[in-house]
Every structure is written in C-alpha cells, then in structure tokens.
Length: 186
Image (cartoon, rainbow, N blue to C red):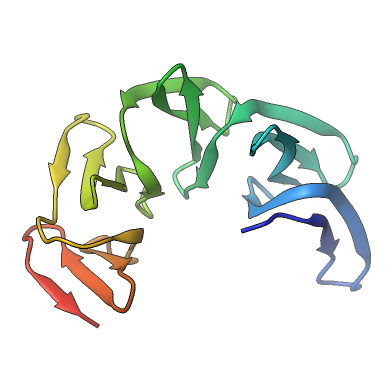
C-alpha cells in the first residue's frame, strides 16, 4: 500500500474539542499508553522503502519524544510493551520496549520471515516463511511450523482467544488451530 500524508487527531470525549497530534507519513498503527500519552509511527521514504520512527506524544503538554528509530514494523500489545522489528544486516531482530520505563530489550534474531503478527497477549509471533505459517514463542524462542500445504499464504492474524491463526490465500481465508495442524476453509 502507498502511504500518504496523514493527520492524527485527538477528540476529547467530554467537550468534543479536537487537537492535532501529528502529521506526515503516519502508520495506521497507534495506541494509548495511558490517558495522556499516545504513541504513533512516522515514516520517511529512503530509496525504495519507508523507514519508521516510533514517537510518544503527551496530549496535555504537546511534548513529543522519539522512542525508537529506524524500525521495520511495530506491534502494540496490551501487556505494557510494544514489540518491534529492526533490520540488522541480513537478520530481522525481534525486540520490545517496555512502556513503564522505556527499556529496550532484544528478544531474538529470526530469518526469512514475512507478514509477522504478534498474538493479542504478546507471547507469540505468527509469520510466513517459504509459503508456510510458522509461530515463534517469544519466551522459549522456539519456532513451530503450522502448515505443510502448497500454495501462497498471506497475512496471518490471531483470533482473540489465541487458539487459531487465520491467513489468506488468493481465494480463501484459512483457519489453523495452534494445537493441531488441521485446516478449515472459512
């Protein structure tokens, strides 16, 4: 998708007052850390790709702080951390930043992955490698291949209960149970 110039607005629920938070090449992913602070990604085009920086902005004061520089992608989760991917040479580093103290932690290097998706509780990563769906446990650092069927697989996403991963083919949505590799077309 082509990213375009965007504006991120804050609308106060009480008096409906609006405030511009950020503008520029913005990622659609953003979220609240607490009542006063929101994070978002701002990109810059470099050669043939977009390089993202992650920012924190205080709504009351308007102060903006860069949290992460030159990340490949980021995944907000509800456990007080943001997972992000950072390219380092030919490796993709899986990292996280703890929101309470902004401590950055490198979890692991992972190779040849596409369309990564962090589980809702932040404990696992689903991704595509060699046209197969894989998971990566962020605690044990173990990988597990979920599919073995032929054909293109795209965009794995987690169900809210984290028991299934749903992915797209050229014509179907497929649901894979994590504990088994049985597949169902939906």
